[in-house]
Length: 374
Image (cartoon, rainbow, N blue to C red; front, side):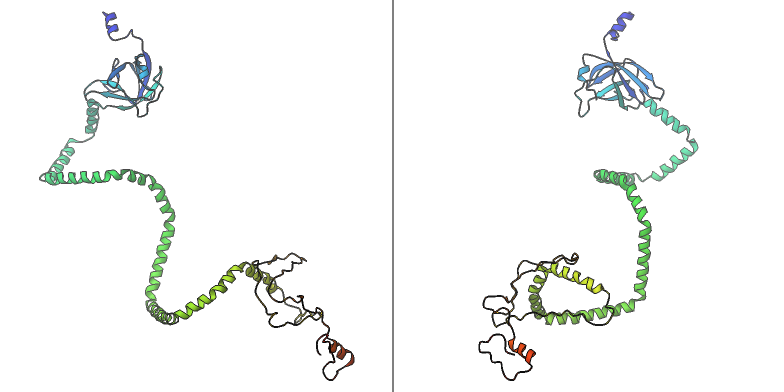
C-alpha cells in the first residue's frame, strides 16, 4: 500500500530541484502543493525550510519534461484559489521572457504571497488587545452620533472625493516627481533665504524712502513731464531737420566705421605722448631742415584729391618696435611733384644774387625765366 501511495504521489518520478525564497510560505502551504504555470501543473513542492532570517525556502520538484517551457526569469507568486484555500506556487511569465529555460538548482525570489484570513484575524486580534473596550465603545458611539442623519451628505462627500481623486490621478506622476525633487528645491531655498530676507529688508527701506520723499518725487515727475513736453515739441518741430542731419552723417559714419581700426590704433599710439613727462625747461622743440626748391602747385592740375585704396593701415601701432623704420605708404591723394613737365630742382637765382651782393633794384633781368623771380 505504501508503494502504491508513493507511486500515486509521484515520489518515484524523476524531478529537477528548484528553490524559491519567500518572505513567508503561507500558513496553509504544505509539501506536495502544486506548481502551476498558465494553469498547467509543471511541478510540486517537495519541502519547506525555515531560514534563520525569518524567510522560507520552498524546495520545488519540477517536471523535467516541461522545464524547457519555463523561462529562467520567470516570476513567482504564492497564491491560493480562495481566502481559506490551500496555497500553491504560481509561475508568471514576465513581459520579456528570456530565451534561457529554467535549470536545475536555480534559486528564485517570490514577489507576492496571498494573505490568509487567519493571518488577518491574528493581526486584528493583536490590534484589539491593545485597545480598551470601554474607550473603543465611547469612540464608536461618538462616531455613530456624528454620522447619524448625515448619510446623504457623507455619500455626496465620498462621491466628490471620488471625482477629485479621478481628476488627480493623471497628475500623480508629476506629483511624485515634484515630491522627489522637493528636498533639493527646499535646500536651494534655504541657501537663498538670507539673501531673500535682505532683499525684503531693502525693499522695505526703499518703500519708506519713497513715502518720505513723496513730495519731491511728485515734483520730479512733474518736471520730467514738462521736460518731455518741451522735448516732444522741439523734436517734433525739427523732425525733418534732424532727419536730414542724420542722413548727412551716414557717409561720415560709414567712413569712420570702415577706418575704425586705424583710428583706434592711432589714438592708442598717442597715449605715450600724453603720459610722457614734461620738458625740464619750458619751451617748444622745433625740428627745422632746409630742402631744395620744387615746382610750385598749379591750378587745377594740382588740386588735392581722395583716391587712396587698401583700407586702414596701423603700421605696428600702438606698439612700434624700437628703431624700426615703417614702410612709406604710397597713395593717390594729391599732386606728384616729380610728374612729367615739372622742372625738378629750382634755383632762386635772384634771391641768391641779393644774398651775395645785396639788394638789387627792379625786377630781375631773366629773359629765359630760369628760376623764380626775386
